[in-house]
Image (cartoon, rainbow, N blue to C red; front, side, top):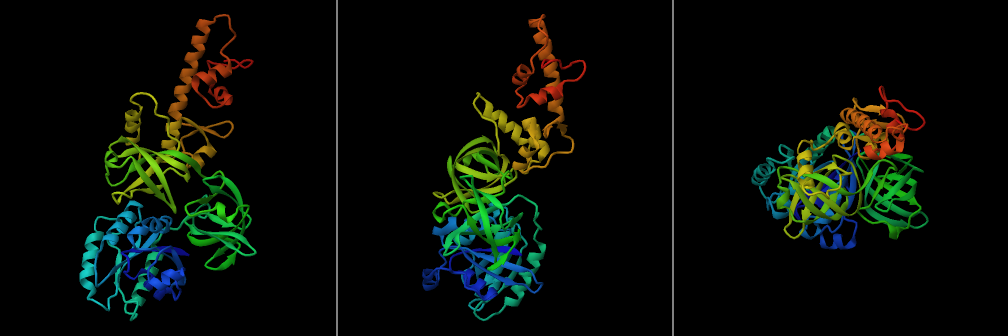
Length: 462
């Protein structure tokens, strides 16, 4: 399965197009059908000629529902962007494109809708010009009329080609399912739905409901209304949960693999596309997946900042997200550089941190993270979203050390032992616990691992 979200200006035919492609009604609410206006997320699916099942997340186009739109497109890898032939490029088309670009969406199809009402060529040229310089530049474009059926076979074929180009996610990746709906089914209990981007969810799995960190059990798994034993990303899934009431679940929460993610409240980020961090508002909303979380922003360098989140989010290094200032209707894309950043209390610490982050890539790997922390357990790297680097020093008890940092620690230990001997010539040696504290190491066994000739360990002393 693959999942595509719609995007585009209000009343440009997104829901009508999904209805024509799938034969299903994406507008779930009676008011939506009465008004012909999408107010909330809608869902439908179809089987493509290749046999691939394609699910749609239909989003509202009205400017009042941008937060809802972002909840729909956030976890989805591709987009179907609709532009009406008789109206052309409009303000919400522009706002949706800015959001998609900030979120890093690089896969999509452009549909010029209502081709029966006006010559689509002008709108098509206009849209292609607007897409230049964005992640959707060069996207395949199709003129279509959901009313007459003109262009629908060509659009279906374009979506089939899009689905074939999408990256294949890792079925073994840790699960992070952003919840976009929650409801109660009589006789079954709490059910949540969302787009699973990677990983696999199985019946009877235990997951954590974030931000609370509450453990819940998966009673049943469905995908496109079929009961299955498991679902692997990318997929639209519905989970029947045990251990949580409906009133304790809301859109924007996430179900995650235990020990698979960092529960972060402070992160260091890089603004993407050269956006100056100093020009951003100090109070913004962070959108990632289906979540929308108020944050405080502290600029560090020209394109780096520290975010303090209103509540915990399950994050990895390298996550892509969007900062939005609702007052100015401005957005900025960000990449998460560090999910366990150091405290900044000393004078000049922020500038020093900015210099450090300036050399980091947008997606730091395990080597960068280990170099920053010096010594970490393997599982600590895992929850930050990193693999152990090949050159790491492997230590007892599943510890890993950055090679340069480890050599520096050995030299410091030798200096501390020499200083202790000079200060207390009659003492038998430096106690291991004292050495641990002076070197700021998290475990005594790391001090033991540092000891090598000419140093030696004797009765708990170095």
